[in-house]
Length: 176
Image (cartoon, rainbow, N blue to C red; front, side, top):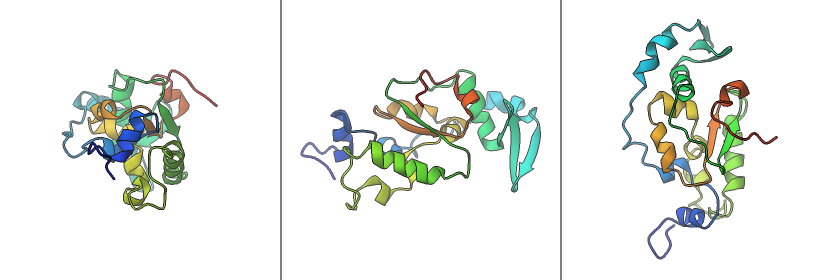
């Protein structure tokens, strides 16, 4: 739903402190080229390998991660493009531990002033999957699309499956 200036209501509300915007509504994901960071390919292939539930895994920083995410994690830790903002919200969860539910709950809570009521067909969670509202950092960095994070208005709502030890490089403040 757009306001009088033609701006989507969710983005207009964010300008006035309403909360985060759904990732897919804020950036044009399809327009950004996929540029996997190739400089880390050799380092990833040198990591210990395994398979879990049919998925290739790599042991990075003492933690087993999906092979497709290991390159993105390395890119983040070796000077990736994520510059933390004071208003950032980072959800951290283990894979397959209710992340979709956590993303939906966090988005609905933090964006309740910016988005129309949940009963509205225009609500982002009625139009989009929670994974389209809250980006997974490892996936963006692995595809070389980390620059899209700069396009998100503050506050940014993001997700990671990295353990706390892996996050310490990019997080300035941890609130418990």
